[in-house]
Image 1 (cartoon, helix red, strand yellow):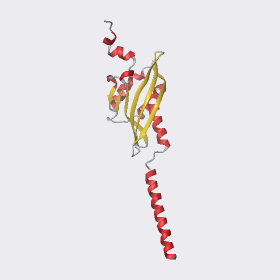
Image 2 (cartoon, rainbow, N blue to C red):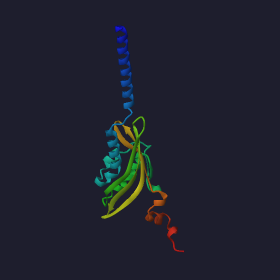
Image 3 (cartoon, one colour):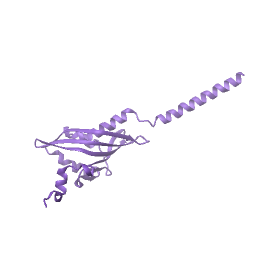
Image 4 (cartoon, one colour):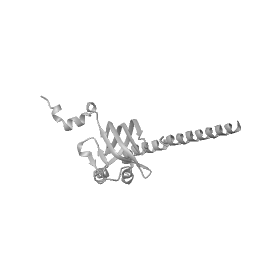
Length: 183
């Protein structure tokens, strides 16, 4: 009887150890709250950098390779590659420009199973000032993909657009003036 009891105890320990080991493997797929917070900060700072105009910080938030892609509101802001992005960003060095405020609404962040890729969607209000006059883009549908590289989350893709039924009138008048011509 004593031998049977020992075998039972050993089996219980083995099963418990296997269960614990399995739980540890599955738990490693769960992203810690710090990754969520780090990704959220990288997303927010990718817009908020314009308030301080810290270009080096802004560049550190982007993938430093030629696969980085920015697709913003207009075709002239379709940028492929980090080198092209740095050239594109030069327009923001104008001393008459500065970011003033921004807001993300309904920010949703999802992580890949491997935990080293995150994608997001949000509605963005982004305001800036040029020569003392503030203007804002409101309710831009922004999406993006970030990848964790060397322990840091960086954007590999940023995209902003308006739903076709919510394009602001100023853009419609600029790009489709014929729609506003009197007949």
